[in-house]
Image 1: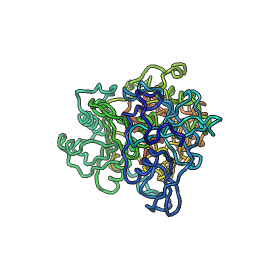
Image 2: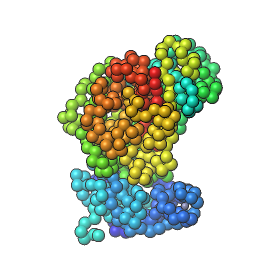
Image 3: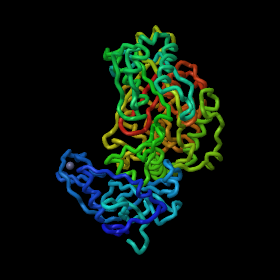
Length: 160
Length: 399
Ligand SMILES: [Zn+2]
């Protein structure tokens, strides 16, 4: 993945503008979601697909919504996609968020997994320039050992 | 009173009661349960019944401790149930009361919401908490872990994502949301119980600070304290009460599996993503009541965020899906001359935010002919619960 933080990468020092401070990031997992987080922290973007009928779903849940099977396989997808929708957060719900505002939060569908929506911050572009359907690269932002969260960066001409 | 759905016209609302409304936290040192009891006593007075005749509770959104409440007021309880979920169940709590009455489990059922946002801020989603009991809390879950790391912590931010998609898909604009906020405020200006009584101009709307784009301050509802109680009984008994009965023509709650938790999932299929999640319950209510949008004289639509009023107008069929923006811009929701006056009481946006129960009160006042902003000759009212995760709900009332 074209991320800046794979395993062994250093976490940035001090609050990074445009992303939620790492110490505020809460990630808990269960046996259905842990494989996704483990893969992402290792730099691999995967989506869960039903082992019986192939229906993809996101986030990973214990049953296939189509056939109710619990068989699951993990399909790698290219970490590129487009913005499905977004918001620019201008108001800090809790005080520590104020120093990183504005936060652009986008839903991004990977090109190879339409309908599977990742949630992350958009960086590397002015909030005013963000738009629905904008093409982005999906990066893994390492927030602490073993935990990486999605971050999106506009796909420039040299990237795609 | 015959034929059709077994709930149709078998029950009626006979009493409404509300405390005054306060800005968030200002009702202290009263407790939320005290406020609830005050509202219930007012509703009993309105109906002309003794509070000891109340034998059922049909609540929503976590409700409150019915056992303690029964002890305080010395009430013998035969029915106590709650719709799951949050503000989506506001209108549906009256449907739950109707179901209890028609099935013979209770005779006089109270639906109550009490809110004191110093003790708990409803709508607080995924933010980390602190020691202030009124602060946002962090119920971290495996599901929230896919949203929270981006800073998505509050309903306004999540509904902003639905709103942006609606703008993209249908061409809806901020001026359309402004019309919802401005027309709702115009209704509140005339209403003594409203917390916001200064008129809102388009200029002020457009200059307001942004909360989560495209939502600005005036697109977001108030945070308030207060309590509201509604009493429902059988249609037969209703005719002996002090006020003219307001009949329950229909009430539906639920939603589609592919809507599910809605804003705390954000994976809904594209054809319903930019909606209120109400289409299945709207269909059910029209079927149950034998009525349709053309029959409705006044609509009390849950307005936590102004764009969701537009989406509900679409989902209930007042206009085609995607045309809600131009529909409101044409003046169609204005009191008194619009085709379908909306939130004549000032709504959650400008009167008070008691998680939607003020909308039920206003529907009853409209159908009794006693509303502040009366729709002349109003016969049928639609009330909705909050667009939210399943269940969302509604209520069709007639006089
Ligand atoms: Zn399957």
